[in-house]
Image (tube, rainbow, N blue to C red; front, side):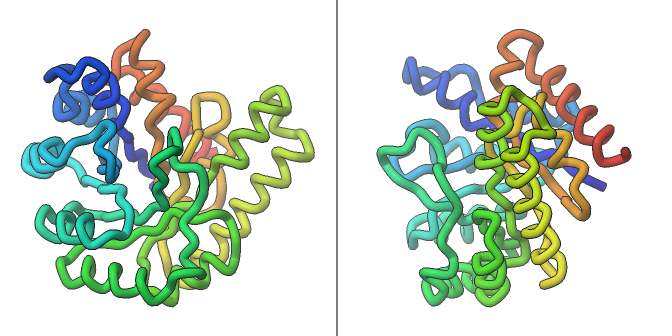
Length: 249
């Protein structure tokens, strides 16, 4: 059954804007759980622009659903993950100047280094995921380094959807969706779990949720944005309903 992982980074963004103690990401995680989230995702960035080390420690101790730690494949982050033991660690590219993650991890271009990182995580009992573009060579490289999960970067699909007037039948949207579908098929053929995420929202999510074999969607900004108006628990509930409806259909 398809699952929803809620990214709560931007709850911490709001807190860090005032450099205070609220809103608390742990409270957000509890509200997301009550709304139906199957997991919580946080990205501990090198510059600590939103989520802080102590947030991850508290989430690990208090969250009752699975925790997915997004991180760069650096020695510092691998060591932290091995100490805290989230259920899953997702390796992502990271740039100091980017507003958000701008593309998939180039697994094919750094296999040796990433294979070592994945092995260290596996030794600590942590499932390794890689955030990659919808390209066969990246999927194949992910299998070679031992990743158990591939999360396909849905940003190009989401941006095409928005640019083409939210028309799911436009040629550009259909083409981007086909890339995600084909990457998903390759992931599954190689025995890995097919996840997807990035820039998904209440208008574009269902086409992705309906793809064959997709196991989990990670969504953050859209849910936190809607939560400003309806509350986080209700925002998660609405997203979960859309995902389950599309998957069932």
